[in-house]
Amino acid sequence: MNEVWNLDPIYRGFDDPAFEGDLNALKEKVEEFSAFTAGLAQAAALEGLKKGIALQERISDLVNRLAEYASLRQAAETKNPEAGSQLGRIMAVYSGLAAPAAAFQDWAAKLPDLEELVEGDEDLKAYSFLFSKMRESSRYLLPGVGEAVMAKMSLSGGSAWSDLQQYLTSTVPVTYRGETTNLSAIRNLAYDADPQVRKEAYEAELNCYDRIKDSVAFALNSIKLETISDCQLRGYASPLDRTLRQADMQRATLDAMFGAIDEYLPKFWQYLKAKAKALGHENGLPWYDLFAPMGNSSSEFTTEDARNYLVDLFREFNPEEADMIAEAFDNAWIDFYPRDGKAGGAFCAGVECLGESRVLTNFDGKLGDVVTLAHELGHAYHNHCIRGHRPLNHEYSMPLAETASTFNECVVMGSAISKAADKAEKLNLIESQLQDITQVICDIYSRYRFETKVFANREERFMDADTLCAYMTEAQKQSYGDGLDPDCLHPYMWVCKSHYYGPTFYNFPYAFGALFARGLYAQYEKEGAAFIPKYNQLLYTTTVATAEDTAKVAGIDLTDKDFWRAALQTVANQIDLFCELVG
Image (tube, rainbow, N blue to C red; front, side, top):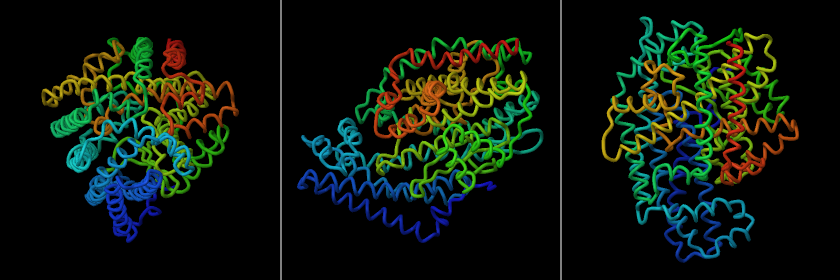
């Protein structure tokens, strides 16, 4: 079994002639598109639409191939400056697309018969949703050279600050028990069975942030001020307004979800206090025991074990996905183990030029690591389901991005719990699932609150590391309530979580995905195999419809708080069972 992913099918290196050839082709196509848009005033409407789409499809193919390769190399080798340099070259060329793309969008949006032209042409009809979004978002375009300027400035602004955060957190040395390790490895110890290991790892983790907190604070302040300025220039009501519009999601949906979560937060606090009491804590659960395993589980997995487990399990659920999972393991799609200089956490990236994906994880052999693999392979299956779309229809909205991944978690944990051999193993599995759902409800809520506070204050002041830590602690107290020990929280979550350094408010989609997937999984349990075609169609729809319209494929109204309550009640039922088991 491979330990690292194979990127050679994309390029054999940055010195591969195909890499430089594609970069030159990208330059030529961006220049051609720019020249084309300069003459749009004289273009016939239908011919202009078709040529503009064709050029953007080719540019999309080239930039996706180039940028995915460079970004994957950078994630796996953050200490290697070449990947960052090459990614900078690619994005510098791609940034030249901003102004002509804005010109094309503005021209198309103003065509009085745009809908009729699109619906009357088979090539354009596939992009009906894209053109409707063009018309909606054209009001937020910057005039003149504004789009080109913002794209260029981002290279030394938001993108650079994001790269800095990733570099610092992946290379900061962590001193633990007299030895030096990395942040990914030390955070993995939060799941260790030994309470002393968990506590000392937590303390070592917090200590290491003192080395980088000021630099990361500058990164966070800078990227948030850039976001605020961008929103003001474009006319968005707020950064959250921009996020929701770009995510094709209604504020009514977000309010319904968080409204239901507010009602159920005390239930999560009940779980945390019950776990604290079972572990011998009287003042709520200390942060270092959030991920403490409970019950007994002898499950240890090699990567080969993980492959067989997941393939066999998904063969029962969805044979098409099982085949893809087998291919991912067998054809080196996955970079498994933590190492110095490798990015922490886990992610999946679609590699459209191959019709494949690549998955980065930091595998440690526990069931939780297998669940993480299932989660990321859910993203890969989502990518698989949308490949039938045209090239410009390969991006699903942010709230729906976690649907397939979280659904996979439900499949794995549902099976594991149902097959538990005894009470101790069942406790272990249920508590493991409650750990995860508490993260995507309570912790995500704390991140959402923190980011809201940062945006509310950034325009008027620079927030130093101590201020940001105070904001984070306050947000955690609000979201975790009396479930956590107030004297043992994690004030540095803003340092280690990359979500603050990318798309704005990239936090609530995890809560959305967790609850939406639970609602879908409940339907699967009722309908069995008959649900699978509906599920596949829903995933296919995610790139060409709003979040609300996508949900309608499964008969769900996302603006109805009762849907979210029903999903949360499935968690409440597990919490009751957990309390009974530990009682």
